[in-house]
Image (tube, rainbow, N blue to C red; front, side):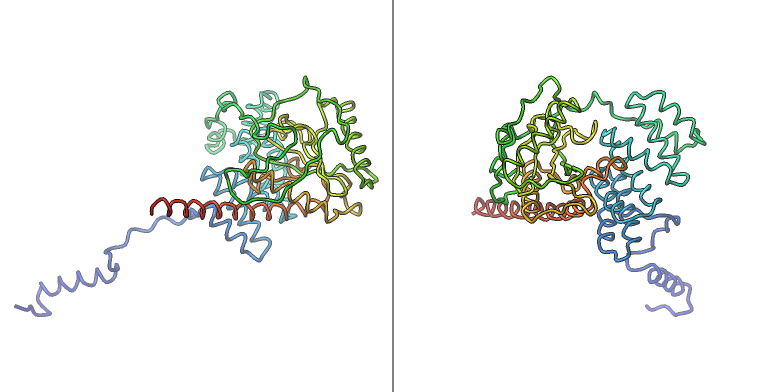
Length: 403
């Protein structure tokens, strides 16, 4: 029996129907969260940054992506985005924010020397409260480095040491240096030789690269008592030799004499174990073996040498000095791709000397710095293609087994 519109039953049914229609087909909506910043994934923000046409927006998105990656526990991705932001801006404040994020990321990876440099650079350019937070992270870094007096002087600069945010940074549990796993031996056992086989990270083959031996430049013996064994390799750094007048030699003999001169300077004046670099690219595009890869280099500074392959291009590529020849560009590109493939070094871990030691040097000059950016893109593209090749090979193998 149908009920009339005016009856109590009909009025109840209509009220229920109106409530359902108002709330949608799945029922009443959940109460809205309080207004605030939504959590966006670092990869999403990084994608926004790449597509942004405005330089300022691009930089801000990269900074936001770096911060998001830190929150997700991905310091390597955070470092990549912070470097992109730093390279794209000349703003003191934005560069300081990038330095702050780089400092935090390197601190999380226990790269204390790098963390200290970036945090120290960031402080003067930041505004409160980020400035105080950067100071707090720097204090933690100095304490881990056993720099007690320096940490105490930084504590005096904290305006509100009892602030909950500052206390959270200062008292957060940090991994001890002794708890870190012992470094693995480098994959390349032969001095300077690059094996033809690809790494397990990808199956794409690269052209043969001839690396001229140490005997070709009459290298003096490595002073073993001054060496440090190379840890697991995870980055590489590009330099120029930076002679005031540049390097004009293009013959094997002339290049060999120049490399030997550098080794003598490093061993006698700097009191190093050997030439500081692992690979040398001469003006004719030849690649020479330098310090054995089994030993840590002396091309960066302190902790920045750890797991870091040093590559030097002979010549001076500062402003209005020399420019790279086509052969140098091609050889340097192939060397970087081979090292990146063999050791699975991500493109974000390819540095210039000025990037890994910001504020300390202009090496390797603007021309080579710009080319290094192009090499990062090329390395990333090559590694992505290698992964796709490996995935396709794995899928084909699985399909054949299934049959």
